[in-house]
Length: 251
Image (cartoon, rainbow, N blue to C red; front, side, top):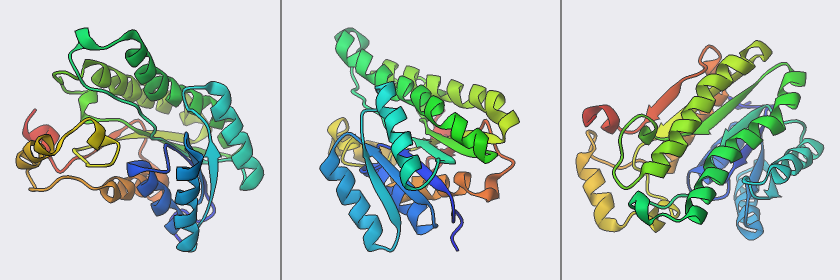
């Protein structure tokens, strides 16, 4: 029996990078996992990896920026495994750059995926969690939610909004025994992150790390398992920095 045995979990953006690591870690700990992703082939591959390790998962195809897509995903997951009592809002789309150079379309997409996607996730799971007697929501935020970031105004703004949703969500949903927390990952190379951060920039980040290395998706997944488990039953409204100490070392 794993630490998440019997729990049904929905992970948005759960087929790649940090999301995939969380999906796989949840399944290893006994959760039944719904992987919500845009690309069907990638989601199916993630399910196959989990099943090959003896876990259970289902691919759910949709865009978290669309409320109806998220509602349909939760409905499908409920029919397959039961109503989710764990939600990980991981999906994000981001591009760095000076604010003056960012288009309305780019800014809109970041807000639609990174902010509205969290709101739609909340709305989609709340009834099922309430009916089940409680649940856990984990939002993937960022140290940028509380620190100034050059050439990342919109990213910082979206992640600050996610932190606000976390804190206010913990207060609003607490009476229903629903905990809401956030994880702030430090520099963590993934295929998605490599689209906006080059090798030289990763090396600069590594040199700033107090513990001398960058993060891994598994580092973030381990924290997510803890927050989803009963071991953290008295923790809500918090943001856990999983960053190798870099945030406070250089803030």
